[in-house]
Image (cartoon, rainbow, N blue to C red; front, side, top):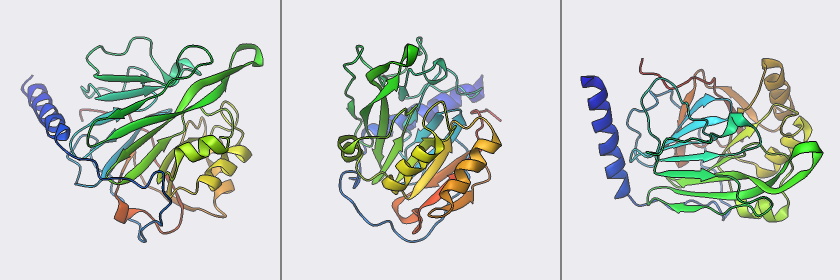
Length: 273
């Protein structure tokens, strides 16, 4: 009980500090060269984050914890469960292509719940400015029942913090059009589904990622090592492949690799141990 109280105190203190921090502008909508050099570490998921740094922890399936220096915690494709570690995220994003990418009953204590869809066919617009972090979305279409199309039924979510642009492609069902590519801008780090069928086929996903030319690609939504290996093989001609060796990494502008790199994280639920 004492440990839990201490955890809640530390977490709330970090969040309070985050509210007073200013966001370092990213070059999300203006192309810029990556800084040479590649470094990464494998930290504890809720340990403090250095200034001008973002921590990314692969939880499961398409869910990631994105944590800022000021202690803001954001979970992508939130299903209501992140593990045994007591955590109420500051922001959760959701996509509703399948039940494994959203929950109908998010904890009411979560300050910002961002669905990636709105009324059928109308989409939704998010532009959440938390000072240290800006969260926005780019609407995409999804396949609906009986092979139909739900226009603007899902979203790519973009997180701008520490001078970086971090994108989560969600349950992407089509290659972005020119307008959507432009809205995404320069994405430094991108989480991409590489299942090869439930979302995009691997050839199309590979084409999307090579066009985005992000400094770091993190594969997600793979259901077997065979699918992951197929994806890595298709990317290896233009991207360096790095096995991080755990579920987490930290990135800052000066750690971005000089050559586009696929960084493979191994998912792990958030745990108190």
